[in-house]
Length: 211
Length: 211
Image 1 (cartoon, helix red, strand yellow):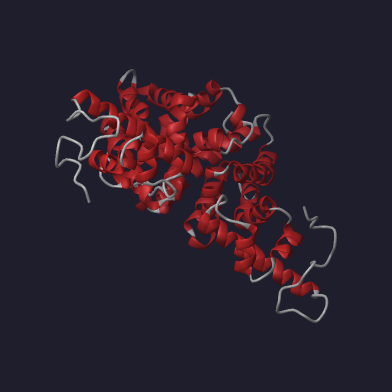
Image 2 (tube, each protein chain N blue to C red):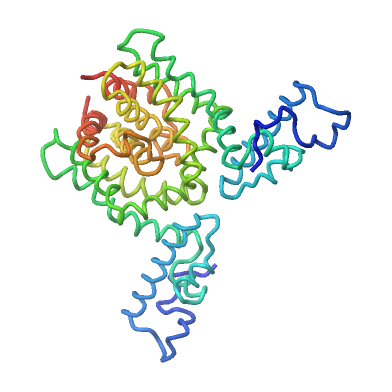
C-alpha cells in the first residue's frame, strides 16, 4: 500500500503537467479535484461499485496520484466523507450559541437546514447510502460521526450519559430527514420545514437536557 | 408484460413437475419459494443488481413463472417487501391494546422488538437498503408504509394531524434502529434495549398524543 505521507510530491503528475514538481497551489488543486471526483463517483455508484481507477479517470489524473494523496479506496472515501460532512460539523457549536432551553430548537433548525438545502443534502445523502449498504463505508461513517459530532455534542452537555443523549436526539433528526428527503413519505415530505422544526425541537431538547 | 392474473395456472411448470397442472398446494409452494428467493436476492444484491432471471434461478423455476405469479421486477419486489413487513404490520394494533397513556411505550417496545430479533430484522434491513438506494424501491416502500402503517396508526389517534404525528414518532424509532443496528454507533449500539425503550417511549407518546 502506498503511504500517502511518505513524500510531499506525487510519484507521477497528471499528463498535462510536464515541467517538474507541481507547486503547492497546484497540489492543493489536484487534491481538491480528486476529492470532488471521489464524492461524485461514490454518490452516483455507491461504495461497492466505485474504484480508485474510476475516481482517477473522473479527476483526469493517474490512479497512482490518488493513492499518493489518499492511500486506499477506504481512505479516499473517508476524506470524501469528511468534506461532505463539513457543513454538518458546525452543529455542536450551535449548542453554545444561546440559552440552554433553546438547544433543542437550535440543533433541529441547524440539522434540518443542512438537509433542506440541496447543495448540502446531496453529499450527506451519498454517504448515508454508502454507509447503509456497505460495512466498510459504515465503519468510516461511524468513526467520523463519533469523533466529530457525538463526542463534541456530548462535551457541551456535561451529563454522564451525554453520548447516548446526543445519539437519541440525532436519531430523531436523522429519522426525520430519512423519511422526509429520502423515502419521501407524505405528509412529512411536503410539510413546512418550520412546522417540522416546531414539532421535533421539544423532543431534541428532552433528549439532550431532561434529567 | 405478462398479466399475472390472466390465468390460474402457470404458463410453464418447473422442470420437476411434468404430470399436468400443479395442485393448488403445489402452486402456493412455488409462489412461496419464489418469494423467499426474491427476498434473499434483493437482500444480498440490492434492487438495482437483482434480476427476475436471478430470482427464478435461485428458486429453481423458469423466469416466465416468476412473471406469471408476480408480474414485473417491481411487483416481485413489492410482494417480497410485503412479506418482509408482515411482522411490523401488527404495530398499529398495539396502540389499541391498553391505556392511552401507554401507546408510546407499546409502539416503541413493538418496533424495537422487531429490530432486535435477527430473523425479523434481516428482511427489514434489506428493504431499507433497497429503498435508500433506488427510487423505484423507495416508491414501493412508501406506498406500503403509507397504506399499512401510517394510515392505520393515524386511524387509531383520532386527531386532525394524526398522519404527521405517526410519521414523526416513526422517525424517532426508525432513526434509532438505523443508528443502533445498521450504523452501529456507540454507546447506542451496545445499550440495553430496555434502556432505549425507556428513553424513546416518552418521545413517541409525545408525538402521538400531546395536544
